[in-house]
Every structure is written in structure tokens, then in C-alpha cells.
Length: 66
Image (cartoon, rainbow, N blue to C red; front, side):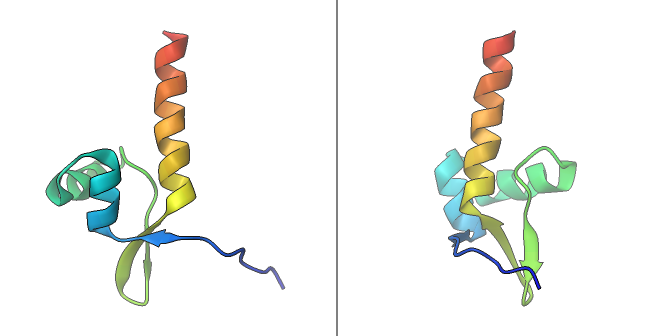
């Protein structure tokens, strides 16, 4: 059986604050599949904090390559 490491789960409002976007913009990014990965857990839409951080880092790395 695979175990899950302890991680911080973020709500829509917390992700929006981290990305300096409105909650509506984050929802649109999710709809367009252009934002960090999220999942529904117990009926709530949540993001792993590390996934958001990795998504931001990847965006900066992609800009550095240009």
C-alpha cells in the first residue's frame, strides 16, 4: 500500500492569493487547463501547495530558456 506524505492542501482563495489572481481567474485557468493541477477531495476543490510552487517554478524556467 502506498502512503501519502504530509502536505499542505490549499483552497481556491489561497491559490488565488499565492498567484495574485482573483478566484475567478484561477477557476478559468483550471477550466482552460493552463494552471496548476487540482483535485476534488470530499467534494472540495483543493491544490497541493507543492504543485502550485512547482507550476510557478516551471513558468520561470520556461521564460529563462527563451
